[in-house]
Image (cartoon, rainbow, N blue to C red; front, side, top):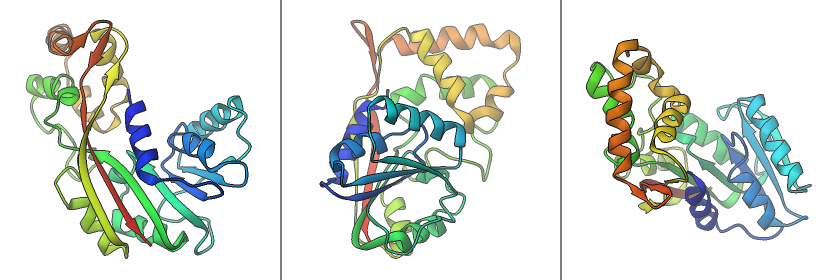
Length: 250
């Protein structure tokens, strides 16, 4: 579902041939793999994530595309194992919201960027949008309590206009820009699959999901499936997603 977000972030980051790129919270490899295809053989992408298992998947995907300029490095964004002024560009897709100390992590990112290099981010907009309203919000209506643990990981941490910009400025970035775009968020299959997928990967919502009693799941699934079906166009579920794109220069 995130293909359009990846494409938008790559376009937004404006990669050039020969650039040395750092992709933070790269997970299974995007947008790092797409960027490696654009910076060419004399450029490179270093994909960083805390999960070695996800980075193994990213490395395999890069090998399948015969990309020799894509490498992985297990690391914490708050303690990057790179020299000062090492990279020409940095990207982070759906990761900045989960840094435990975002200002500290962004200051560390600022350290490893060359003067004038851009750092570009994609983050979730507000929870009040179709994908979340038809999945996690429906579960929340049934079980009550907190949808997300207080003080825990929050996908919507930077959904308020200007909130990510303020952290970028505080971390030392200048010429900070931010906008919210509505991008494609499409599932090529069944509504039931969308809901099962959302529950399987939505780690920040795990405490809420664990409060659902076994006997409540059929009603929740039925309600969610009916809500998701309203976004069907042909063989696809087309939600659209409000995504925050932000950048700053080192």
